[in-house]
Amino acid sequence: DNMMRVSWNDLVQQKLTGQDWTMGSRPEAPPLDNKPDETIQSNSFNRLLNLAKAQKMNTDLRRSIFCVIVGSCDYLDCFEGIIKLGIKPKEQKEIANVLIHCLLQEEKYNRYY
Image 1 (cartoon, rainbow, N blue to C red):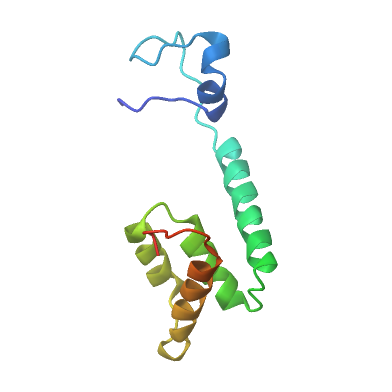
Image 2: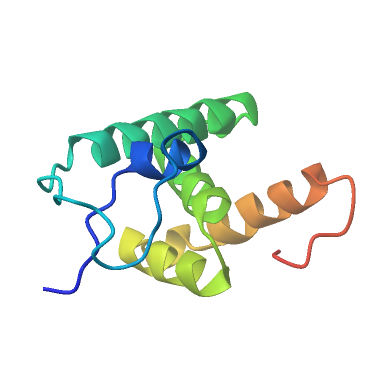
């Protein structure tokens, strides 16, 4: 198992503890605990939902599309997320509507859209 077991707090507090990130530098590996990651994911998801509500995404479909578009790291991740939503053919026009809404909210040109 070559996976490095590093928690979010280890990364954030690296300057405070002087942790070196080479293999074997950590005296003992922390147990794998998904709770901090789940907390971070739920907090970011809640922020995205609040942002979607602020942008007047008034249906669950539009909020879902908005969260996928804004929360994706690149266009491929966004594409996969939208495919996973399983949007019906009649509802696919909402993807374009939300995308154009996001585009119009930008002050400067954003290549992502």
